[in-house]
Length: 375
Length: 227
Image 1 (spheres, rainbow over the protein chains, first blue to last red):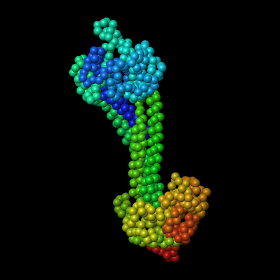
Image 2 (image 1 turned 60 degrees about the vertical axis):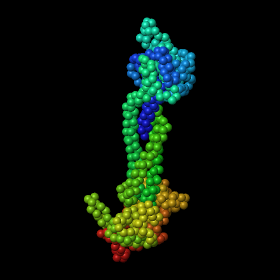
Image 3 (image 1 turned 90 degrees about the vertical axis):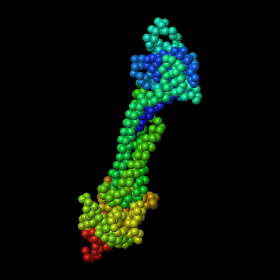
Image 4 (image 1 turned 30 degrees about the vertical axis):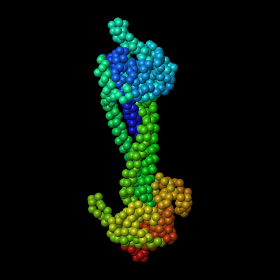
């Protein structure tokens, strides 16, 4: 039962992560400049200059374009693009967040960024734990110190590992991290201002608009952009994580079968090993119903105590593993009420079925035969 | 109290052949009688007792309790009839190892209306009568064979059944304990209970008011002087 619940919690954790990402990509149109870019975020694009952002905002059906800078915290690992890497996200706070499902990220302690904020940061829950950060402490990035003004609620998805800065601060981080960009800016070869330094933009759409149609309209009307069609990106995200989902579901199913069989076996064995006692009880006047009721009560006791014990064990082990994993910003288990309730219901149902089966087998014997077999 | 008509019982051997054990048994035992069933080992004495006590269904024939054809009843109704009419004393005692002596006695009440203060008092009284009150809280593994059989006897008579079936009740006992059990069974009969004993011991059969000999699947009534 402990293994079953732990596997379920791992599956739940992965599903929550995928659903969170899916919800995010379905809530906005992600746009980047055409190019190889920094290899960050969902767009993997190049520069998205301010003039392009203005053109996007003029495309019919759009509602709010928020310039963003998304950078890997550690550029040396950015080529290992994963959904779990730590990212610096700079957002243009003068524009309301266009993402329909993440209008505002919930803050656990402190506050979120406000327009005009500089030199301050809000961090995700896992990032805060792994870096030992809290409201009032300082985080140094590329030799620049930022005061932590807020820690986000745990989302169990990408923002848990975000450092969120004002877009101006994020642009400074980008320049500090990228020698080629520094060289380019110093040479004056490219006519750029700070407002051109965007890795992407989040684009909203007006009520009633089809987001995919708006995205295709942007592709048609704005040159040199990479535009992610929300539904296509959602499919891509789901297909790229399908292997992990299938793996966990497979392991979970295996645990389900093994755990279920051992539980059912425990209940059935407890009946079969007392077959003589059941024969004696029937000799004393117990009916099949009497015995079924007794066995069911015992089975419920076994499965409930075993189930609750297993769940408790899984919670303790999962909690310990998560505390250890939190040092690297990871969280492996999601013990939801649905999972715990489902595990108990599963255990009880399985116990009841096993009890019913075992009782039926025993009561089909004559009392004399039951006594003979058990003696 | 107890009557059978044409009871037939056979078993299937591992090779598949049918082995006849009881071939048309007619027997009647009235209240107040002690009936002994004797016969050689393997003659089918225990099988007959099981059929009389509804622990096994006969292939043919009927068993009647107080005029009620109990072999016609369904499984649950037969269980209830057993609880109402019959008390069993087994050779190997068959106490439940997880229950104390008094709990084993009270087991008979659990399926016959439930355990009440009255049945608790009655159980303790019965244990006292057989000298087992001080061992009431002991588990079967903590009791000797004779003590276990005394507890089993209390269990058999807790509900005051009109019929007590005892299968070699003294088979595993020393003389002193055997005497206690037999005395109690005879006392029950004097109080109006029909008692059927299966035994291979003549001294036990001597206590019976009627003796049946089982041989070749047939039951022959013998008067005591003829034995």
